[in-house]
Amino acid sequence: MHYIVVIFFLALFVWSFFATGDGMFLYWGIPLSLCLLIIPLVNSYSVGSQYLRLLPEYEAESKPCRIKQLGPSMSGKPVRIEGVVQSVKGTLLNRPGYKIFDGSGTITAQRSTPLDFNVRVGDNVQIVGMIVKRFAFAGDLVVHAIGVKKIDTLTPLEMDEALVSSETRKIKKYH
Image 1 (cartoon, rainbow, N blue to C red):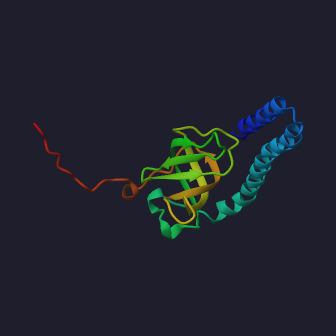
Image 2 (image 1 turned 120 degrees about the horizontal axis):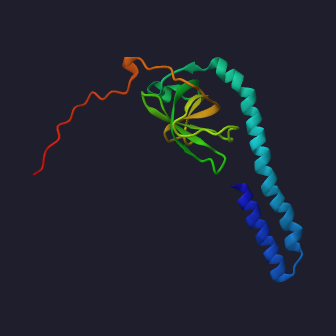
Image 3 (image 1 turned 90 degrees about the vertical axis):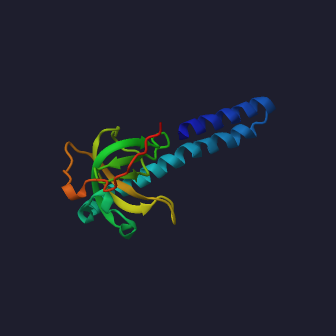
């Protein structure tokens, strides 16, 4: 996505130069466009290298749990969840988010850097990360995914962990 922004601003500066004949558009525009290219790349590399450094620590400290067990009391704690990917969003912005279902519930796992491999809907994944709120002080709980890996098989649910509705509703018929 940031490549599109860089190309847009380069085209804007070049067009402004030809429209006005003022060389300052190129003098300032090209370095600023290069900054728009370099800063996101450096940020992505920096965050990605931090994830690689933190992953062994998170894998050692995280406890496997089911999505229905995740709650506000677990905020800030490392967790390990397994599930099936139901949807993938944010890949265009290099901030992928995965909606994960494990049979007991669903949760979104968000990452701040793209993965080296492609995760698709229907893939079995294991997520290692920290429980946080979507926004700093409000919003749903999400897993800030430090590590994402594809797995072949999921750990089966116990019967008491399955998402079962205890409610029964009567449906009225209208003629």
